[in-house]
Amino acid sequence: MSERKPLMVGNWKMNASHLEAIQMVQKLAYRLETEDYQRAEVVVAPAFTALRSVQLTIEQDHMLIGLAAQDCHWEESGAFTGEVSAPMLAKLACRYVIVGHSERRRMFGETDEIVNKKARAVLANGMSPIICVGETLEEREAGDAEQVVTSQVKAAMSRLDQPGEVVVAYEPVWAIGTGRNALPDDAGLMAEIIRDKIREAHGSDVADRVRILYGGSVNPGNIKDFMAKKHIDGALVGGASLDPDQFAAIVRYWR
Ligand code: PGA
Image (cartoon, rainbow, N blue to C red; front, side):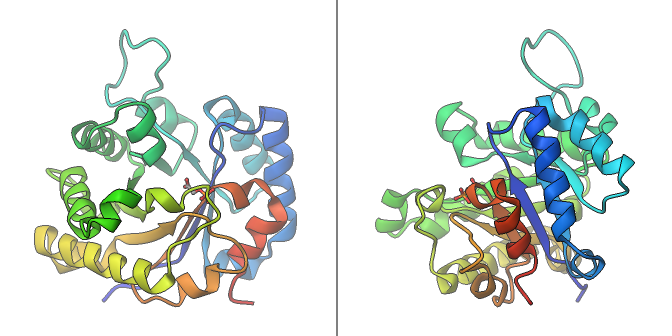
């Protein structure tokens, strides 16, 4: 079984100008020490308009923080006004691209098929997709959570050239931005179900390698309980990642 390095991703969503983003990444780096980076991979996902500034800040200050984008288009270039392509993001030294966030699925009509196309574009450009999956409250209450999540995973990961490079973020929709996190036991169980599904479709090497994150109202007070779960390898953090003190405390959950 391969060792999976914990991955902590701060999803800043539609927050922070490029000037504010520079300050946020500087404050975060100031709070983290070498040992923190040895224990966990730390990544921030600013808005498109801040990616270049944050990239340069990271490079100039030799920070060990990685960069992610929040979305991309699946085509390499063309007449898609307002869109940003995976090759553009690769040129900005992004390591990751979040795809299929529930806010995009819900508000912008992203289907499993679109999420799969985006994941393939991200991989084709040498980055890793962070594929978001998760059930709504109605689906959970109807007992459909497992079926919904596994079918999202299956669709998003179908026909990928390098499925082992993928990160999956399990984010129950009802837990995002609500202050109401999933129970660590439930999230841990879902992560195990996701890994089993990946094993079934892609084999053990891939399943043991893929990192599975939990997301949804993660904070410094609950992160430890999620990280204690065998199949949870990190967190996708929204609200709490906007505060460098809180995000640093999440990264250093083991202290
Ligand atoms: P939250 O968002 O931490 O604010 O709940 C998580 C996410 O949307 O990735």
